[in-house]
View (cartoon, one colour):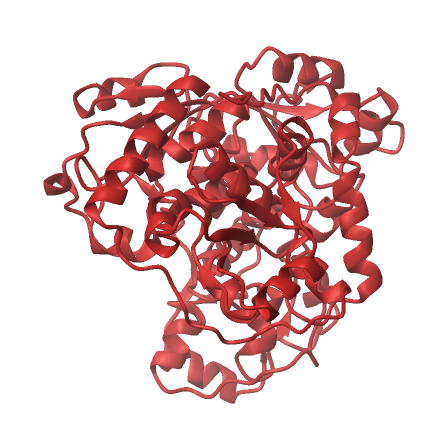
Amino acid sequence: MNPTNLDPLPVMRCEAVRQQLRQRHEIALVDLREENPYAQAHPLFAVQLASGRIELDAPWRLPRRDTLIVVYDDGQGLAEPGARKLQALGYRQVRLLERDAAGSGLAAWRESGGELFRDVNVPSKAFGELVEHARQTPSLPAEAVKALIDGGADLVVLDARRFDEFQTMSIPGGTSVPGAELLLRVRDLAPDPRTQVIVNCAGRTRSLIGAQSLVNAGIPNPVAALRNGTIGWTLAGLTLAHGQQRQFGPASAGHLALAQVAAQALADRAGALRLRQADLAQTRAEPGRTTYCWDVRSPSEYAAGHLPGFGSAPGGQLVQETDVFAAVRGARIVLVDGGRARDGVRAPMTAHWLAQMGWQVAWLVDADPADFIETGPWRPASGMPDGAPLLGLDTLAQALASGSMGVLDLGSSAQHVQAHLPGAQWVLRNQVALAMQTRPALTEWLLVCADGLLSAWAAAELRDLGRADVWALAGGLAAWRAAGRPVEAGDRRLFSPRIDRYRRPYEGTDAPRSAMQAYLDWEFGLVAQLAADATHGFQVLPAA
């Protein structure tokens, strides 16, 4: 594609985007900034897709090449180059969001009356707050739960986060039961209907959705969310546990049957569709529709065997991160779990939440475990660019020994701090040329990332722009380490600011108390923001 001979990019007005959202027409509103600036302010349904990762992330997040895609930035100059990259990948309906006089699409959204939201995964978090507001989800403060524990009360604490999050910090005595597993496992963990069930997460959303899931399903036990999760526990001056390993066990046959009846009835009430495998291919091939196919079981179950064409999105995380797993608002989502007779709980339970969030969602009612023929963990399909200038380890050793080659690390800043090639500088992809200019004495450059894909795309792009002195390490850092080569750690060589990831106030254990409280205060205000935004289309299922 010749950048000097291109048709002007069409522009879409902010109000036209909002109209698409209100009418549930398919649209992807794409923020091309890095995650940290994105988290400071963005429209409700804007999805973050960093401009430097378009070639890797767009193919699985925006799977249909004729999807309407509207891109924007905040005046950083990312929008037009990002749109051209999307066009080069074959996307045919790419638009720029209208911009203000300074070239900011974000500012134009604000000036046109559009609401702006902070943080990440905002549609799901706002929906969780709306659920609590509409259903008065029961909750208990940290002090009350601690008193129950200390008094030897009959209760179980179920942590609805991912297992790795649970291991980092948890309520003492808690059990890891990620969100989609709750209904399937709760009766085996609390068989006595008098046992108090407490559901927690780090903040609020997964606690509220998890507790309301059990309430919606009509389990006989008293249920409550831990109010404000581990943040609330910490702010109450209580001590968290670390490195805990307690996880759920298998579901007994009788309890599985009860969970199936409840989950499937809820999915039907919410308007989720039942889909048979025989109709799946036709559904996926329907022209003009984007269809995401997700397996909502645990990653280990998925790796052991799954249906071809389905990615891995554990149900609780799918509900929590719809902006990641379904970047096209108005798309269709198809879910599968462990198959007929063995499950039929996790897919319909997840579907009942997604339907309330305004998605057209279906779940496979007759998935046959015999068809789960693919194995291994899910990895988004990301191809290698044609003609990428790759350098093998042996040739690289000679080049590095000469002292004339600089090394730039394009992986995540967190990966760089953990391990990188000796002497490598970390840089954002869109600042690579600038980093090279600061060291004119070097005659060759090596680009590196974790697996070699992103650096290959960046090197190929620079070659197309006339840089014959740029190479990418074949296989990336993984190949380097597999060969027993030495690595460094630390943040001494950061060329770019670490804006590629937003530090969540609810992760880890060292966030300032003021940041934790500010986060909770922000969540409390989300219901009002939803009302002001008016594009969400959420419909909370009333009590039966």
